[in-house]
Image 1: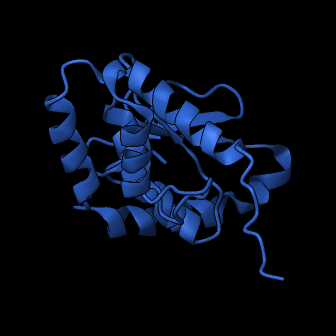
Image 2: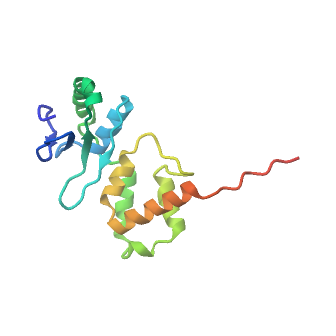
Length: 165
């Protein structure tokens, strides 16, 4: 990973956990690109002590694919170089700036925000960079409310449409 321009390893991995970030590329777009190539990689959102990053667990059973993973990672880094956050992120930043107290937002507004992000009926879009970018900029309490709204929607019983007899 250290040999791929634009990436930097966070910390010194002593075991099977590796985290890396970038000051040059959007790691959320990188994750989407890697996932589109068949890798299962999830983001680690940023927090005060750490930037948004890619967090990998490497087990003995998957070390045989490390060279393939690194080759794809190198290609994907080049592919996403220059990728910008989508319009959803800019729109959400603008909307949040106009709301003095995000806890005052009602459930219907949260559902609308989730819908704008492509999240409806418990489903997620294939590419999640914009969603992760959005989650990364939101205050913690607002992230929690969105997650609760999503989980509520996912597990709320929906009455099947009655069929005409």
